[in-house]
Amino acid sequence: MKLPGRPKTLNQVVSLPVGSILPSPHQPRRDFNLEELDILAKSIAQNGLLSPITVRKDPEGGNRYFLIAGERRLLACRRLGYEEVPAIVTTAPEANAAVLTLIENLHRQDLNCFEEAEGIYALMKESGLSQQKICAMLAKPQPTVANKLRLLRLDPQVRQFLIDHGMGERIARSLLSLEGTDRQLRAARHILQNQMSARQAEAYIATLTGPKKGNRRAMGYLRDLRILFTPVDKAVEEIKRCGISVQAQTTEEKDFVCYTIRVPKNADPRRAQTAEQGAVSA
Image: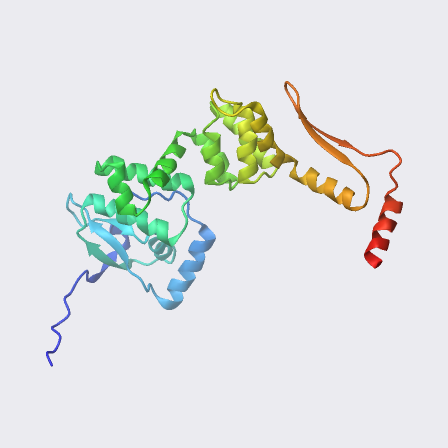
């Protein structure tokens, strides 16, 4: 039997001074959770750094390195006061280093949709690669990447409002149909105050944009609006279950959508409830 040859040495781990490692210029993440960093630091203090960071030698020379992957680990080591940190030095080209940084963030912890879009845009701009090639490198469908990049059309003020209040990508995309920062912010505040789901937010924004030429008639928007009346519909159904012949109707006027509920004056909820209980007993 032929014995296997000596394993080939790839990417050796070296110990680098923490002060010689510079942040990645391709890092899309803007904010790091301090509580999570403290938890990671405690784990490293107890068990050591199990996975070394990855860096790239500064092409301009000197004893400097640019971080590619492991920024949270590096920050945790700095919080512990470590002077050196284990690292793998790679010779990856600039474009590949940018891809590795973005992928490492996407896979390890969720970026918000704007950080992800900014990372993809920076990668395209600095590498000079087409959107199609970037999609292949990130293993993402082109429509998905195109939709991410569209989010950058929102004003930074609108983006920050959505981030601060945890409003997701679907709502952010729907706001793009409104013109002007003030209008988008008013809509976002209304969505937040009324605790709308993404689907409800889309229906609400559709009422602000109005019907488009050659598109469905205004009554189509009335159907979309019905989702806003879902809680009322449930209440009406509950009243009917009690045996009261309540009537509910939605109509559209020039500037309003009216939801009308008609309850008979001679309705006796107690009698209806008694009748219902009798029916259940039978």
